[in-house]
Every structure is written in C-alpha cells, then in structure tokens.
Length: 347
Image (cartoon, rainbow, N blue to C red; front, top):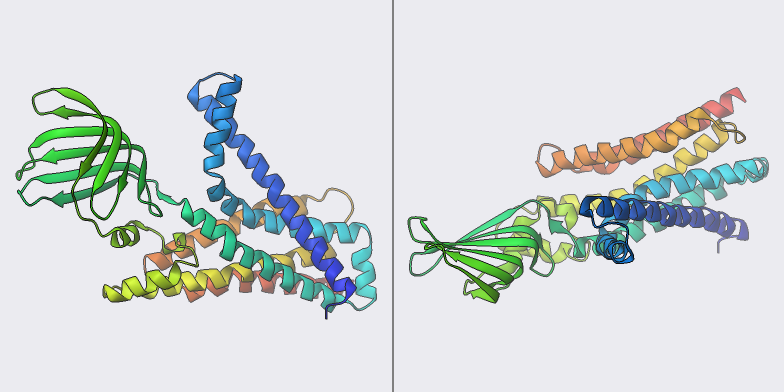
C-alpha cells in the first residue's frame, strides 16, 4: 500500500500538471478564436464571436493532444518549485524520503502518459483529417473517368469537408462536367456530394442538393492509404490496422513503430519528472531565475522538435523506431542524473 506521503506527492504533481493543461489549452483556444475573428472580417458582434467559438471547439480534440506534453513538463516544474519554495523538498531530503519522490515521478509519469495514449490520442485520431488536398481517380465500366478532389477528408467516418470537386471525363480525359460541392461522403458503394452545382461542357450550370456516383471503394484500404503518419491511428485501431496490413501483404513495420511510440510517451513524462526534480534541487527556489525560465520554454520545444524529426525519419524507414522511442527519455534521464550528482558533489 502506498503511504500518505507518496499519495500526497502524487496528487501534488498530477494536480499541477492537469491545471497547466487546462490553462494552456484555454490560452490556445482563445488565441484560435481571435485568429478566426481576424481572418473572417466579420466584426466583433455576438454572432461572429459565437461562430468563432463553435468553429474552434470543433478542433478541440486535435490541439489538446499538442498542448499536453508542454503542460505535463511545466506542471512538473511548478510542482517541484512549490515543494522547494515551501521547504518541503528540503525536509523530504533530510528525512531520506527521496525514493518517495522517485516513486511519485514514475507513477504520475505513467498515468499522464497512459492518459495521452488511451484517451487523448484516440480522441484526436477520431477527428484527424488529411489536411492537404487528396485526389481519387476511378475508371467506370463505360471507359469514362471520375476524378475527385477533396480539401479535407475525415478518415474515421468518410466525410469530406471544406469543399469538394468532381471531374467527369471521357476515356481520353476530356472534361464532360465539373461538380462543385460544399461537402460529401465516400462510402463502400458510392461517392456522394451535397449542396453544390454542376458545370457541363456546354457551359450550362445547374444547382443540386445531392449527387451520387456509383463507385465501389474499399474504405478501409483508402483510410490506411491516406494515413500519412501511422501515429495518427489510435491505440484501439492498432490491431485492426495490423491485420489489414498483413492480409494485404504490406509491411507491418509501421505498426510496430506505432507500438513503440505509445511506449515512448510514458517514458518521456517520467524523464520530464526527473528533469524537474533535478532543476528544483539544483537552482535556487526563490526569485526569478533566467535559467529556469529558459528551460521552461526551450526544453519542451526542443524535445517536441526532436520527436518530430526522429519519427519522420522512422516513417521514411531511414531510422529504427527503437532510437527515438528510447533515445529522448534516456538522454533526459541522464541529464537529470547528472544534475543531481553535481548538486550532491558540490553542496
């Protein structure tokens, strides 16, 4: 059974991390609302502000996953800074209860990492879309071609948003008609577009509410083909993606890489806790310290950039996934151990 001290330290760290997460997410949300209002030129009326709030809320699942690592690290720093400021950290060291701190760091790191893996990433994955334009080409039985251009395609439910264009051509790609629509859906039996108009080769224009093209599509295969990053799949989709790839004789390496990415996340939060502990006992707790401010801003941004670069190399199959999965948390852990060792030698 964990002691009251261990539970107190765990709650202290976790509450600071969650509070930072909420505050940082709120700041990003407000900035996004302001950006939408400035871009829309719709003024500052109640209706414009409400519309901006609704549009920003639709993207909530995506950017909470981006703010989580920064909030986790800053929350741990604040937690240890509070302990140092109230002299609780010094009392714990004198009591020989450093192992309690280490246990709390490991526990809260695992909990926060698993929260991201099991809840936050799947929520973000459900609303993940292919941002860049996609193009699908299908040949009909009569030799004619259908070409679909979509601004944004939701790989979870097959919905197309932000505009869609369908070109109907003959066998030599001579355009016969162009369909413009606001949105649409790709299903197994048909491509359906809604709320648009069609321009024929003769220059005629006609509005329509819904138009369907009878085209058979393997939606699962399309989803995996459009997933530019295997990390966009949630942990719950991993087994199905693995078997689908195996059945289609494709490499299963990307899904092994994804599993390593999920293991990597809790390790990073544990390493964040080690760095926060090292900084708390190495730097003076009182007053504004330029080094601490620089670490709060520079370290998480550097780690995020390094993660992005390394995992892009993994996806390009130029680097084993085990390197980014273990290299970053290991290097952070070594840095924390170095700080602690230095502090013990010179104090």
